[in-house]
Structure formats: C-alpha cells, structure tokens
Length: 476
Ligand code: TRP
Image (cartoon, rainbow, N blue to C red):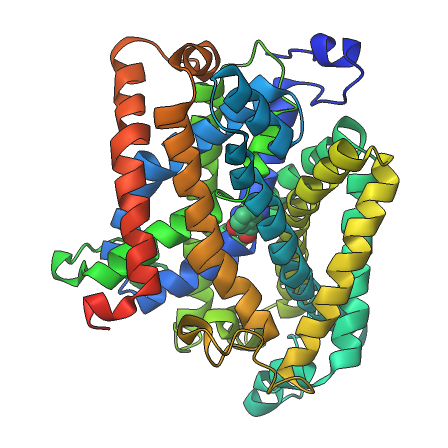
C-alpha cells in the first residue's frame, strides 16, 4: 500500500510520502465547510431527498470524472498547476493558451482562500465561546447557561458587526494555515491531514451517534432520504451540480496541484473514487449529524450560514453536557476547514514557487499576507463596507458586497469555467496516449470515463454556466 515517491525525491521535488498520505490530504481538501455547512443548507433549501439523490448522481457522473482529469494532469506534469497544463499542452502540440485554465484556477483558489479563512475565524470564535462555557458551567452544566434564545441567536449578528474582532480571528486562521503550507507537502500538509482527518472522523461519528440516540433521528432519515421526484426541478438539479463541484474542490486547479505530488505507481482512478466516496459519505453523515440536533430542539431546518452559527448553538443549550458537545462540534468543523484552507493556500503558493523561484515559506507568506488583506476587507463588508458593491455594474452580481461577491464570482463563474476548460482539454485537446498512461483505467470503464469527460461533463457544465449567468431562462 505504501508507495514512496522516490522519483520525486530524486528530482528534488517534495511529494506525498505515501499513497494513504495523498488520499488523506485530498480528502482533507474536499471535506470542509462545504460538507458541513453548505450541504445541509442546500439539502434543506431544495427539499431534501430529491436533491440528495441527484447530488449523488452528479458526484458519480460529473464530479468523479473531473476529479480524475485534474489529478492526472498534475501527475503527468509533476509541477505547479500552470506548468503541468503547459507541459501537457506542449506535448500534445496544443496552444500554450491552455495554461490559462490553470491560471484562472490559481486566481480562484486565492479568492476562495480569502473569504474561507474569514469563516474559519468565525469557527474559532465559537470554539472560544464553548471553551469559556466549559469553564463557567463545567462539564455537566448545559451550554450557554442563563442566555435567552434571543441572546444566543444574536451572537452571530453581533460578531458580524465587529470588523476588528473578525479581522483578528481571520489573521489567526490564516497564520495556522500558513504554518502547515510553509512547511511543505510531506512535512506540513500531509502531516496535518494525517492527524486532523482521523480526529475529524472520530468526532463526526461520535456526535452523529449521540444525535441518533437523543435527537430526532427518524425525522431526519425521512427528510434526507425520502425521494419525492416531483421536487426534482431545474433549479434543484443545478444546485446539486454546484454543490458537487464545491464539495470535491474542483475547477480551481487544486486537485491538479495535489495530483502533481502523487507517485507514479498510484492508480489515480482508484484513489479518485475513494476520495469522492469519502467526501460524499461525510456530507451525508453531516446531514445525519446536524438535522437530528436541530429538529429535536424544534428549530427550523432552513437557512445557510445561520444553520450552523445561529440555530445549532441554540440546540446545544438543551443537551446534557451541551458545552462539551458544542466544543467538540466546533473543533471538528475547525479541523475540516483547516485542511481545506491549506489546500486553497497551496495552489497559489506552488504557482509562485514555480513562477518566480521563491522559497516556499516566502511564497506562502506572501500569499497569506495578500489573502489576509482581502479577507479583512471582506470581513468589513458586513459592517463598515456594507454598501460597497465591487461588481455592482454586472447585473449578475449587483447588490453583492465584497464577501458575497468573492463567493459568487468563483462559484457561479470561475469554477464552472475552470472545470469546463479542464474537460475540453482532457477530452479533446490532450493526446490520448498521455491520458491513458495516467488514468489507471482499462477497457469498457476507460471508454465510459472518456465518454463522460468528452461529452457529458462539458455539456452539463455549459448548461450550468448558461443558467447561472442567465437565471431567467428557468423562470426563477
Ligand atoms: N471542498 C471544500 C469544502 O467543501 C472547500 C474547498 C477547498 C474548495 N478547496 C477548494 C472549494 C477548491 C472549491 C475549490 O469546504
């Protein structure tokens, strides 16, 4: 099982020390706020069962083929995302302009990093609240003792008013991320994932089992897994595809970068399947973890960020040992967010090392400083900069503040464009011989995968882009 990266060491380039190190790091990148916050919120907003089934379908038929496409480009290139694409294009006699798909990815990863670390800072704030709680009420006391429901619900909006506090927490989260990225691939990123991901799984299973015994588990099962096909409308399907992409970290060259550190003897089709399976299981388990807690407290199961940061804290109050469970919960979310922010910081860092020949710590430090500046500005967009609409001149993004614009531009535009270009590149431009040498597939399965990459994925992605840019087509 354990394959060392001798070839890469010989070439002087850092890489994953083993196949399982790569798998854990890639799962760490994929599993994050997208699984824990976005998936439950999207499932709730889109009617539960029908959304969930279609989401699984999208992961298998679109997400997985694109994941394999990205990792194989990286492994073939053995270099940063832009240089890997450049190599494959050059060896296929194609235009150097294809490098642009990775360049766009580097930019997107940087933009996502900036606001992702702000959310990471919020998670730290809640960790702080529950640590304080443990000191004041002890292990057996309920969480947030003495606070009224409205007190608890106002924690989150009050935090959003405090630009300075959010900036400090953002800086802390960026600094922790930087610590691991600066130490390199095998010595930093992989080490963090190998420790944090198993801890994450233990906490997730623990809290889920707890919820199954004490919470509204049957209601949750009915909600998440009852398939009412009349609810499978166009917008629900699009939401599911978008969620599949965000969750697998696709379309921003992240998996090209991670793929470039994989040893030659690893079967990429198998590892991609493992990564996709793990990511999807975590999303489903997160649903099974969060809804019973929320539903048992008789709270509403709707609402994006509010579900985790306003509704859920509320329900810890009525639980036995609520402050311990609350603390464990937010520590778990923090671990998941950290391994994802590390993957986001790695993309522009690897690019800067390759492009300008910077030493890794300097490249990572520069990326971190710039991401912090953009992050602080976006944190203030909930208060002082509320009326600043950077893209107000584009109808699709009218009314978005800096924070939401960073999210929307990447999710609605850059990620689907990046993934579309990737599938066209792998399906049509790159020489088939290179693809076949990397993908680890044979026979019928190989042909089926290639069909998906060549036809289904580009068509589906083009459809998402069109409907994303012109939502009026669906009449919504
Ligand atoms: N997939 C991660 C999550 O679910 C977020 C993430 C990390 C990401 N790297 C990414 C999303 C790259 C898009 C692109 O939270």
